[in-house]
Length: 128
Image: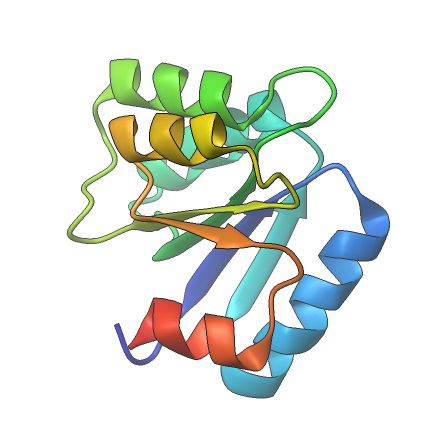
């Protein structure tokens, strides 16, 4: 994945979104970056994007959020069966160091589990 045209951030922490956007803007210039506060909002955005045939190429997903968290989001997304992991890469971003979270991430659609905060180096490893 070299040029990422569309990115969806699903995170309920404003500071984390701000930092993630800064890192993204330094590497993914020209990308359309959208953010939502929880998994339910993320599913709504993805359903709308599917209708327009404009699914994001990258989803950066927090695990622990108010409302629908990251793992519940992944379970619901799997039921919808319209995300192709070939076209959309899902990366869990979390401050959690709990090994059970990492193991659970591997059992879901997530391509990677990355420790917050997102840095340029971590983003490069995700993209390339």
